[in-house]
Length: 91
Image 1 (cartoon, rainbow, N blue to C red):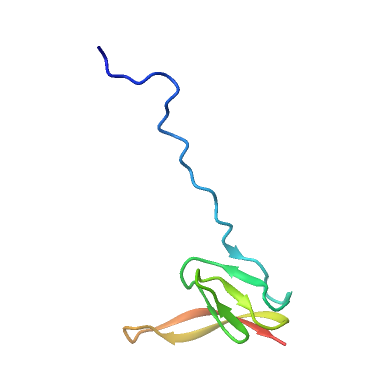
Image 2: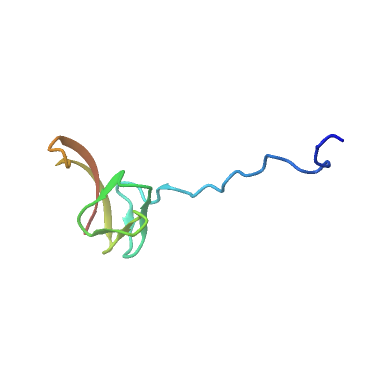
């Protein structure tokens, strides 16, 4: 006999749910203390003044104020300079 499963089985349908990553509060907007600023995987954006990084790399506002995005030159672990995007909360 042929070894074919009965109808109804499929190899499709295993797509994961989206994680809703990205910028939640944009440059110039006001944020309250504890607001989520950015959800990310890895350190695409760095935490600046009055911003803390959570365990899943999410950036949170520590104080109320306006959001300001800046660029900063940092040294990586090999000694090369790279430009990183920094998120600050300015009061």
